[in-house]
Length: 414
Ligand SMILES: *Cc1c(COP(=O)(O)O)cnc(C)c1O
Image (cartoon, rainbow, N blue to C red; front, side):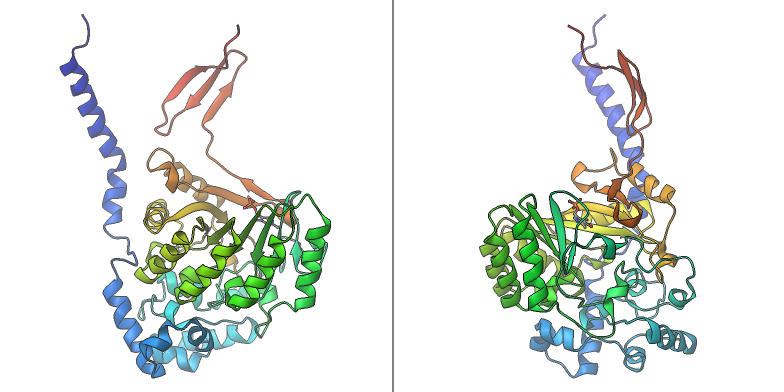
């Protein structure tokens, strides 16, 4: 007896119910995950409180130079804006003697004033654990050994990075280059950038150049325009990329003027660094929409951080929120063992479980690569759950996202 149309529809209904059940745990968890869009009203209140403290008007708040100049980096000011226990106050001051910290007023407005575990706060406000760390290395990537010219790190054949400044709108507590952050803002001297560009000019296999830092978008429009123009003039440089966290930490930087300038330098890509759905705010959307309208494809490089986003549901929600603001999840980095940051390091197993919870459970667009940076600059190494169970001459065994195993022909002999 054949399967009738009605039978087929019933099978599809049953399967659809099953599929919904598969994602039920996420649907439940999602209710309790905070997002920047849900918290908009609270962010507005925080902003009003911070503006009042600085006696600032809307125009100043929207001015990125004002945001940079008024970065909070003093515990006496911080305690007026966030609730700090006496102990926290002393600890922050102590860490500050060893490691620089600074938070833009905007990024501070995303923090819960009363919650030390707030995932935004944990990224911006120092913890005593930073100076208790005895495990981490200053420079586990040995960047100093992979720099053939000033400001350049080269780990691959066809692409490299130029570190154009040490300045940031906010110094992430998990920063992998904290050894470069120093005490003061220090854009690269023009002579060093020229030498770096000279190196690229002389090495015709370099087709992809990444501007990084620090945060390149803390430089002025005219300075960035100059660097990009120099790169445009090199025939073998096919694409340029900017790595900037300003859409997250200081979206005011993404002005229309900046986008009009960037648009002259296509093909140009921008990768940013959102780590938690709470960071995906209305202001962040305004910034990413402007960049997207200027034709700049946007990617996200998150870092897997203990206590911040080491949860499959949170990571999935982050990726969903990113797609809503035109940002394609690109990488999730396993946190590196950098001295002063190792309290954020998770197990690799946690990272694998997060990846296992993405494939099949959500849009392929919401699935980044999970990457471990091999020690000493030996390159980004993708780590993925194993979907190939075994490989024989005629057949392979594959496992799908639900864990069902299938026999599949290993090509066809004809
Ligand atoms: C991450 C990185 C790149 C870019 O890597 P992609 O996988 O192409 O995004 C290039 N050079 C260095 C030194 C890097 O660390």
